[in-house]
Length: 171
Image (cartoon, rainbow, N blue to C red):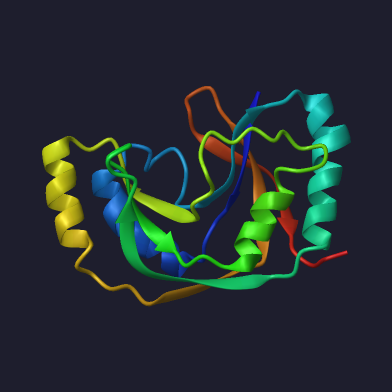
């Protein structure tokens, strides 16, 4: 089965992201706005229960909650026509990402970690140019707290569902 690890932002940040996602993101119905902390990986039930969940519990227990800010949009162009809310880089979010790629956890990374919340993807070149051109003029002033992360699994229809939630700093 396919699993992934994500942080779901507060309702306030999700509402802002969804105001764009419902129009520009074909994955809108498959998963709420999120920060991908670990890309999709394959594991069986035994690996999840015996290796991965104990490892994630340790990581959560030994990681303190932290805050982040979102002040603008950015994109992955020219690689893909994806537009996202840019998470201001912080030591804490990169440390959490590193921990989630160590120990018993699968370490494959297709891309360098860029903390973000996708708001538009799979746009045509023309649509991307129009949408990104107008969105990058906007200023955002969003601050949020990360106090948990979720282990997700993918359903047959492509949607993602929470398998377990891990609270930071909780022994």
